[in-house]
Amino acid sequence: MSGTGDHEDEQLRWLDEQEKAAWTGLISLVLLLPAKLESPLRQEHGITLFEYLVLSQLSEAPQRKLRMGELAFLASGSLSRLSNVVKRCEQRGWIVRTPDPADGRYTLAELTDAGFDIVHRAAPTHLRSVRRIVLDSLNSTDQKALVRVAEKLRIVPDGLG
Amino acid sequence: MSGTGDHEDEQLRWLDEQEKAAWTGLISLVLLLPAKLESPLRQEHGITLFEYLVLSQLSEAPQRKLRMGELAFLASGSLSRLSNVVKRCEQRGWIVRTPDPADGRYTLAELTDAGFDIVHRAAPTHLRSVRRIVLDSLNSTDQKALVRVAEKLRIVPDGLG
DNA sequence: TACTATCACTTTACGCGTGAACTCATACCA
DNA sequence: TGGTATGAGTTCACGCGTAAAGTGATAGTA
Image (cartoon, rainbow over all chains, first blue to last red; front, side, top):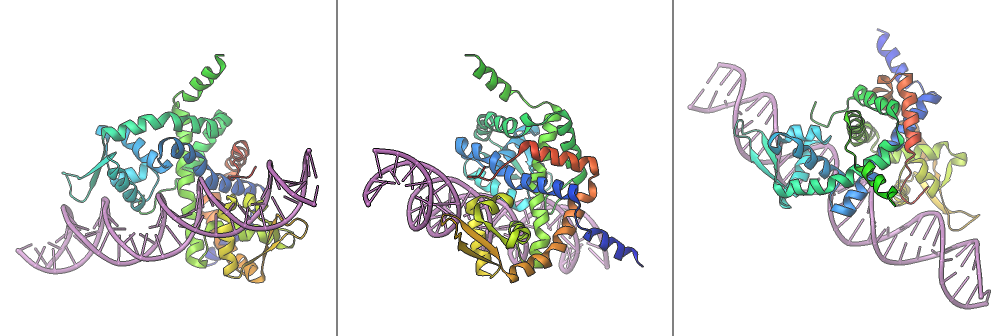
């Protein structure tokens, strides 16, 4: 069958000018944005971007509680990464973990009051960064395009999805 | 002056639905893409994504030579990060560093033949990933939008720009 | 009831990135 | 000529992320 060969050829076709531009733009974005967004959170509140996302997702969840796996998905991280981060947050008194009474294989992460406090304090910092670094420069068309692209790529954390 | 206050208010306005969707999409992208793109390079060639970008930029430069600062900019990394990576590449025989004869403050990084070899071998792997994970899912409009967004955000490595 | 498979995490060793402090070379200026 | 400032790059200690192996609970099966 020649289909496989053609498929390989197609995948190895070199990038044309527009493809290369799109690729270059995307890679500089994904390599540089996280650090820019994290810096203010670190300076002002001593937390990482991923920690903020984890705490923030919990704060918006029903009863401020989520299973680890779902939290990992929502915060765009692997389960392993989340486990380490939640351990550190637990040591700082922001999260407590309990086995899910409905099924002992699951673990529930729950935000404490102290955890809620720090999200509450860090949120304005984060919001300012997001506007200043990202949203202020983008019009409605750009924003819609971003949503579309993210949906089309639909990237999912390591063992999940 | 009330201008500053208004500016603060504006920055702290909560995200509307579309802004939040754009933001969510972007963050999952920047958090998850690097790992997806790096994995094949690591498995098949034992190099990181950033190492590939560094070697690749050098391979396309005149005389396969660039100043560290410019290389950092082109590879979307900080000078510190680049310095560490170039040191490791030098130990593996892929890059050599020499002071710029024109101005001793600059350092020139030059790709060796062995360095060129590994870029050459890794390029198809990388190209396949880029197509499979990113470009295959995007049409021309999406690609143009990405270019536009990246240009508007114009994010630049740490001490540079 | 046991035995195996699967699933949801958790742990650990290792490597990488970061920011701060440092080195060294050139530019500027008295 | 000296003396300071600037700018490029390097180094180091520290903390985080990763993959792989490990744990412990439930589901499936004989």
